[in-house]
Structure formats: structure tokens, C-alpha cells
Image (cartoon, rainbow, N blue to C red; front, side, top):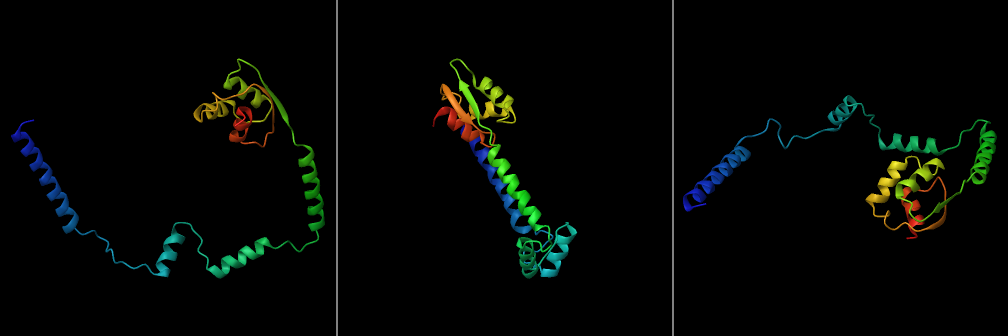
Amino acid sequence: MNKRNTRAFAFGILMAVIAFGTAYFFIKPNQSENRKIDENSAKEFLQAKGYTVLTNEVYTLLQQTKSEEPVNGNTEEKEESAEEDTELDEGSQVVYQLTIESGMTPGEIAVQLEKANVIDQAADFGNYLEEYGYSNKIQLGTFELTPDMSYKEIAKVITKS
């Protein structure tokens, strides 16, 4: 670029800044910045958008009634069924023995875990291993895995990290 082109370019930038500055400082928006919103107009606006507006006292009262136990006679039945559910959950903890042998790919490992219902989607787990760099660190051996483990926990177990 020569001197003349550089000056023309600089002049063009100067004109653009002046035009934008003029528009920014002299053209006022329709709404005033000092517009005050009172409580009633805020309530009306929120209710028009589908929200429910509560005072702090009403909200606290709702939280207290939610946390209290029901007064009816069915509480004993609910407690007994809850105890049975926890006993079943403790006894039904399924542990899957995953054996990783030489030459297995992360995709094959993910398919085995999906067949054993340890993970939901083999492709998602395979992508997770690749994305976070676990696919290069997988160790050989036998590992105990459970269905309630996250992808990160499973990856740490099979990489021994």
C-alpha cells in the first residue's frame, strides 16, 4: 500500500467512527433509562409471562408444609415399603467383571459394558474415552464395575488412574 491508499483508509475509518459516535450519543432510545419499575408492574409482567409470584412468607410456609410428614395413618405402610426397597437395593447391587485383554479397542469394551447393562450407550462411552484421552491409557486385567458408576468413574477404574 502506498501513502495515498493508507490515508484514504484511515479517513474512511475516521468517518465511520464519527457516524457511529453521532448515532450513539445523539439518538435517544424510545424507553428512558431512568424508568422505574414498581412492584405491581413487575408482578403483572411476570404473571403475563406465566410465572407465579409469591411473597417470602408464603414461600416459607410452603417449604415448611412440604417438609412435614403426612398426618394420615398410611405412614407405617410407607415406612415398611421404604425399608423393603432399601433392602432390595442393597441386595441387588450388580457387579460386572470386565476383563480387558490385549488388542481390545475402546469400542469393543464399550459394547461389552452396554451388553452387561453397565452403560446405556456404547457409542457415547467410546466417544467419552476418546475425548478425554482415556482410550490410550486402558490397562489389561479384570475390573469390577457397577451400573451406577459414571463414565468418569468407569474410565478411572479401567485406566487405574
